[in-house]
Length: 274
Length: 269
Image (cartoon, rainbow over all chains, first blue to last red; front, side, top):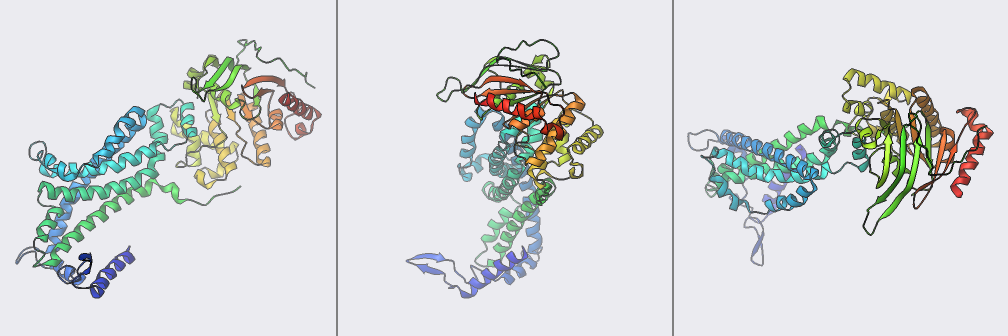
């Protein structure tokens, strides 16, 4: 993790030192970005910018970014949770009824091909009347997050062998008890990778949702605001991007924390032979 | 020495003397009406008395596993009826009249060995303390008391199979259904588990239907060996086995070898 950060920093500064300040242009197409201070400020400039006040006399940038992160984190969490619940329910319904799987799955896939920008204004319209405006952003986050959960979980719920299902049948366990005792635990190895994808999708959904619904106070909005100052203050927009990256890390970390206690048995691998 | 009884197949009187299993003129067709239709069993009748140990033996594809699964109500007969403990097989399954073990141990890898054995008890709503006590007892029986806290992934195939048997026995069912449970085990483990199984069945008075393709295993374990033939699956012979004893001495007895020869001949014919 630390080494990864160091490598990323080295690449950034290394390219900045070696790359053409005007960018590498091949046949009139810029294939590598400009390496000048305006496009790629030094890491220490960005660090310094974090400590400086946002505007003269205002709060320091790091505090503004952190607060925006917390705001967006709340939206992301709500969207992630709602998306996960919807995904789980859909997966269970699709597992239970073959006809639901056949009827619904194509639409679940289709839902993700609808451009978000087309959907956002509609959902934004619910703000203020149906729900507070931050919740509309959560809806967008949930809309992106439910998909990997539904698809991954369906695969997981269908993963138990015929032998396991027969065993539960021999115990006279109905669908619900088979779900709880067999299918759900068997699906966990499928669920966690799906949750990681869903977490990332929820962050993207929240950031993009804030921008397209025009919700104030979050990191998405901050990125837009700061990017307007990019010509005069190029380091500033990168501070907001760092915030968005931090958000993604937080969500991924939360999924890992959830995974630890539930996947204990996978850590033992040594086979006893007697 | 026992009488060399080979009653003709398919004539089963089915008296109501506490018969544990009555299979009456059962036919099973898979994929009926499709191009890949298979006649798995044809006109099969079988009665297993209370406390009786019956082995089903035959070449692969003779439908012995299918017959076992019909008794377990995991599949339904196309025609004919299956009665278990005096009730239709479906009702008997819902009443949990049997324990079952397959060739594949089929343990739940996310549960410890103890919790795997507890699973059927859990589904029956047995209290936690009793569940635990019973699981410990069953693991003791199969010699795995020290591994109660291990996960199945940590155990060898033979040990997993013993856990599966402990799980089948945990509910102390009046009927035990076993589908080649020792098929994947080495000869030594197999013989030890055979003796253990006999001990358990004798102690608890459990009726057992045991599917195997090992002639010696069938003879050693069973009071009666039912021989089946393939395509379509039918019962071709039913051989009573009486051994002087069911232990090491029993494995050396002339009666044991005579019965093995008899079953082998029945399989060939």
